[in-house]
Image 1 (cartoon, rainbow, N blue to C red):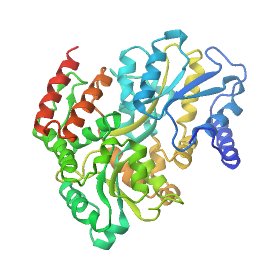
Image 2 (cartoon, rainbow, N blue to C red):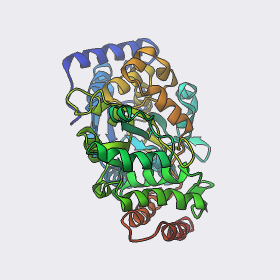
Image 3 (cartoon, helix red, strand yellow):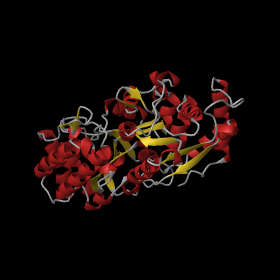
Length: 423
């Protein structure tokens, strides 16, 4: 699904939204001053085709500051590689505004690739509190939260209703239902994103956090993964693959593959982001009207999700930094954030939208998602995050495939992360 897929009616609505935004306080283009002009916005691939109309609305209202969208691959790893290659080109780079994964902010800021932003330019007090921390580094604001995210447990509500059991709150309950109930209905038990890429880092971190552990502390300066909690969390996932209630094909899954497996009616449980709930609930899905969503389970009760989402940052060498800041203010305004949810199925950063009765009727998982975001934790913060993530992916995948025991994997994680942190 590409950015250009937009209905005329949706575009008209977005133009109206944009007009309201300008009337409510955004400055018009007339007499463009210093730092104003055309922009490029680089972002990972869109899965719901929502961003094109948003930017067309901006371009209609700001003819002197038109935005060209540069769509990079869906894979976060590939997107990061292309962004960093461009950023290293300095003033020869193509990208002015970057839609970056929340965990890249520290790395990009430490490298000097993105510029600090004035806090008073953006209404940070109207955002969900945990998301603001993702946009800061060393006490300064280097980006503005754009969308947030937290992992949820999607489940077949029809199956659990027939069995007379509630959705699981603990790993023991999840394991029992995945092992015992799923086969009665011709289903596999549980899947997440277990291919060795950024998604596996997220799933592994959630397992460690949900057992009460951590991976790094003190902005990446101290390795804390060698713990009973980490062995418990990695062991839970490895046991699932070994015993079969996590199917082996899940070791090849990213977000889309796992969502499709659940949407096709092959899984009882799935860990994924909220967009998967929205897509699997849509007309044409084999499980539409049959699914629910709850917070991730943990070792002894509700677990801890990794805080996902993305931030908007400005290239240090942006051609028109004033226009870049104005675009970010537009994309994070409440009317546009509403469209990010309703058209893109992406969780907004504006707190008020999670209390909107109309939106809750349309997206019944919003209260659950808000609770998950408020309790979520970021991935390990580090200026060398790319290396940290590669280590986690490689070591945890070896544990899931049985090449290494969870105990040995955790010890190796501690050694290799210490080597990264000392560089």
